[in-house]
Length: 314
Image 1 (cartoon, rainbow, N blue to C red):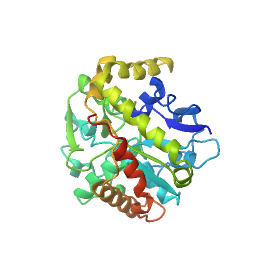
Image 2: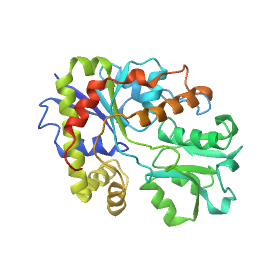
Image 3: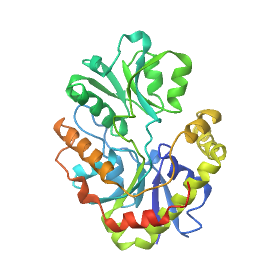
């Protein structure tokens, strides 16, 4: 059986696994599906809903069997009625990014964002961060002007004055910090844990347990390799950017990887509570078509597999 794995640079673990060949040592027939090359789903106005690319292609013929993303996409899929299940989560990535504005803007906190243009990679963890930050200040999604910006180009939009605030992530945030003074409006730490996470179709998990176990084991091995070889792993991201006609800084990518948690753990009650709170907020703000119960997407035996595969130290 061919196992199709969806990947893109924003999920560092799967991206490195795509390039270091460790999965192929466990599964002889792997097809890697670059999410950036998939036909795009229709763009969604950030005021009207959430993009559904990840969950669409998880359930589309010719899509993929396994996917790793940030915090929001599995909630989006569940809100579409997709029968997906969680595989595992990384540790907290609270140092990965935060909500910022230029110091000269006069914006000092999330409470000042009413009526402001806020740049997010809409549908990613960034949407959840902004919603949680607004809710803490008694504001809602309709109180801001959300602007969908590419995760790699949002910094340029902030510097150009096209948006007033931006959820930046490293290494892109470092490039902005090198060119301008920025003010942190909301730190991720203290707001939510912001892990990487992985999910699959329930049908795949139940009918292809051996293959799923192989993917989990390869991810654990690959993550340990990243920790031991961050500069070599960083080269994968730089070379990819160059192949696609762009540029990337090796030192900044290495620094970014050194600052991120690697290794996959089972989903926890704390994580599921965060997912449920985000799902409730997304629905209340009109971004999710139906309420969801995230614990319906848990298969306990998968957590046992994930924990059994963890190396002694990652």
